[in-house]
Image (cartoon, each protein chain N blue to C red):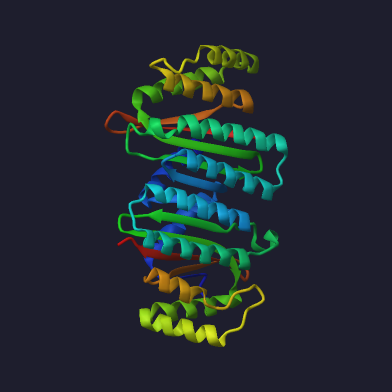
Length: 188
Length: 183
């Protein structure tokens, strides 16, 4: 018997894709608009998955905190509405713990701002991050015209505070003044 | 480290290329199956298709996910840590529902034969086969009545695609693709 048996080329292209994602040990990946209903279902699904993996309560809490920050602010529907591209959310697990990936297209200016902010954040001590978090929390004003950026900034600081890990990011330039901004957060 | 972020971008582009809505990899409990179905239902609100099409996709998904639950290996060391998979993509005119799981070599011939049989039949032929199978078959140890592929083919109205790849010894990965036309 041959080691591969298949019916057509279309399924081959999906198997190639599957083998690529297998290497990263993805648990779950979603590509689309992030509505409140989707956020709820994603959290619910992660909770069920974590129950199967019999994870500690503290890890579960950290993952949930990171997910909520990522989904409700970075990928939030109202912000993504500036363009037609979807957000992507992925969660993977390997021997070193979990990784949460999120990415979406956004105006280049905002992506540049967030990249600079994360670079600065990665250079700070945990105490400085805590202080910065308190300060940002005090100054956040829903009526401010920069509220969306401030809220996203606060979310990223909160992620750094919760995980105690450096945040990896990448900005890929695209046409029409848009950039694909993605971050990876490790939780262990 | 940065490579993993680059990998996310690659994945994003691959998901966009295949228009993938959702991927789940891992164990399939009844709870996970419920969540996957609910996630698909919610993402459908963004899709401009009829309720009849949504219902067909939903029914096929239920059948495929239940099959994975029933036939999944209980001991993952037996299958070299290979995870089961569910993926759904939405192209311009079709939904592509993909599942993957491990199985033993001795069932491959039976599966290929069943798929080839249903792929060769038209709607009336499938209806007849469904009736005959329902009357003559008995319930298997894992709760299946052998109607799975016939039911899926009837709802999909497109040929079922399959892919088998040897993983280790007599353990193979089985991937199947079911297409539902949107109009």
